[in-house]
Length: 192
Image 1: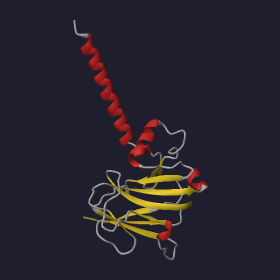
Image 2: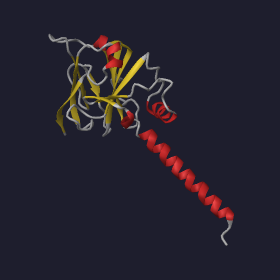
Image 3: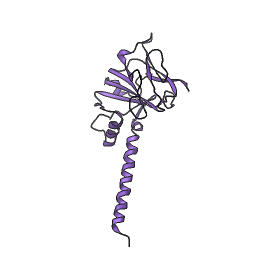
Image 4: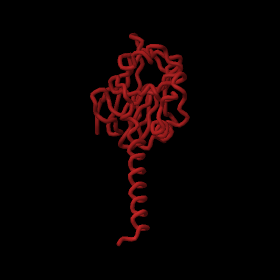
């Protein structure tokens, strides 16, 4: 007859492995939990509310330090360009947008580790008030490893990139129509 201690130890180990793997899968799959899609952008409006489950909260804590309540900020994430291709430091991008329905907003690039990309310029983000507009009232930000003229975000040498568009004190349209509000396009220019 088998020793019951071995059986209990085996059950405990299998349970731990299943628990750890399911938690890791849930935490790393946070971007996929961004339920509403708008072009290349994704958002989950339950982030920052009492309805957020513990796995989603843990995932936000892992990639979004100091996330605010959703009445204060809404976070749109992009892992792909407007054509659906993954954002990568091997390509140059032109991010083009107009006015956003928020009191204040910013766009920031991150590496695959969900941290800011170190660069000599110490430039990680742009916000609406700093971006000049063209005759159509549109702004442009360039994302590239090579320096660009104008509003340039250094992409570093990390293969995978992602963009975070934060809307602070967003207007009603952000909550009512997050899948149709005008958000920036992410246009792939050239790849190396």
